[in-house]
Image 1 (tube, one colour):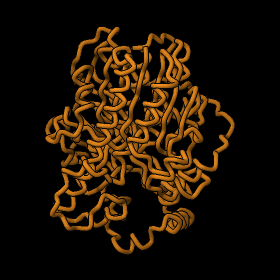
Image 2: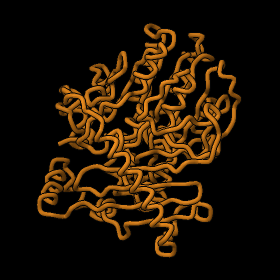
Image 3: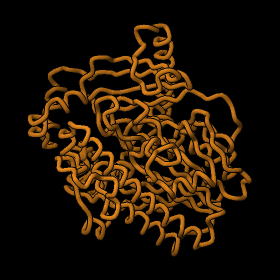
Length: 477
């Protein structure tokens, strides 16, 4: 059988039609859900891409796989999903549109082929480009990278299906179309208000200008247009599978790696506190017909770290690596009570770190503030200068200060009575908060302890183009 995993970067669950959204943004994803399994309550292990990508390829949380910060490469000696699938005769190929899940920082290991489309010369020539400093991309050694469109990804995947795909394949596809900037092509802007004359155009540098309801609605409309366009491009891949006569024998997994915020908690985009707008993600799985699994909705709490174990179960892998922390999701594995799910978001020493543990009924979050010594403060100023943020901060200091400064560092929410996470009960229920903090600390300590036992491969030779894209996307200095 075949497996295709398709990731829409920054796609939150509640903007997908089959999750109850009132806009028809996702007919292709809806079709896959109707023919397969929709996981109603799936959550991400981080609120930004790099650690989530490593979790999707290992079934491990960030403390165990070790890819946690901007500076990290994915180099731990931990078994990857394509390596495991190769043991049952499945060949693997990857298609990446961004440096945070690129071959040059370790994501291509175990794949038979892995293409970093953001460095493709034809795509660079015809697409919007960004400088790697502004995008904080570590390990890139070039100044400029492309932002491939969803059609560039589908073009590559469809061509591969038509010319190079073999029987029993695993294809790993990562689209950045739904990631900031929100810039849907013509024909996908119907959700926007034609009479809107404000400053918001979906570009990152206009985010501090989101002040009115009209500004926010315009931003959401641009985001939704990108989702609709990306969904249509995913449909082209589905059509190609049908044309090749292999749709029925292909397991299709579609998911978002994290969400984006729209001021539900006074913040935009992602990479900060793991409220549900950032960690509640869509996960739909169409099984291969041979599985006999009927279409259904699974209510049990799930996590993206469960995806590798679920794929292994569906493909007949019996020797599951001991580093897989996820479980086989029902109906591919046995049903059972929902396990707690965790998340960790780290960037740099100069930024806060964010953690959460979530059960069916409760959510606990904590913020670890960075060191405020002279060295780290000077490093912060250096990064602000390198990324060209000085004028933006001067123009709208409130936007940037609110992103990294917090009045409270511990949060506890009763999800049954407060699903929107508005009432912090950490002072009213200190014992429950302490209990969940202890659960979080045990999880992190165990993951870090196990990571220390993993040997690391030699430092990766980061190629020039990847290093440049990572700078362009703002992930390196």
